[in-house]
Length: 106
Image (cartoon, rainbow, N blue to C red):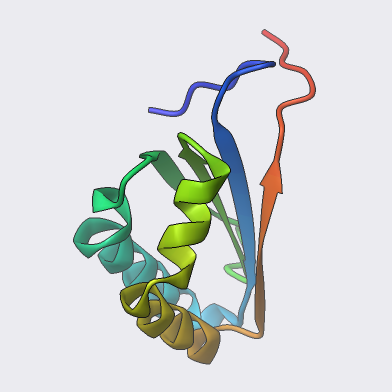
């Protein structure tokens, strides 16, 4: 489960995907498979969540890793490169961006 708190010692990665409604479900299935089979088993993985907009034209993926280097190592692996090629085929664009939590509100 994600823990969102300022000054936490973890890396937050938010990836946005842009696609057509016709490929949204295929991309969700590919992302779910990648997390189940590979990503969630990598060193440093903490948690992730997938969010879909109402029009099914955008997916936001929120993930947490213990360290920036853990996330980068996973991205560079041959297995992840295979998944990335499939994601690229299913969407117009996607971009993973690393963030630090600046503030939280309850």
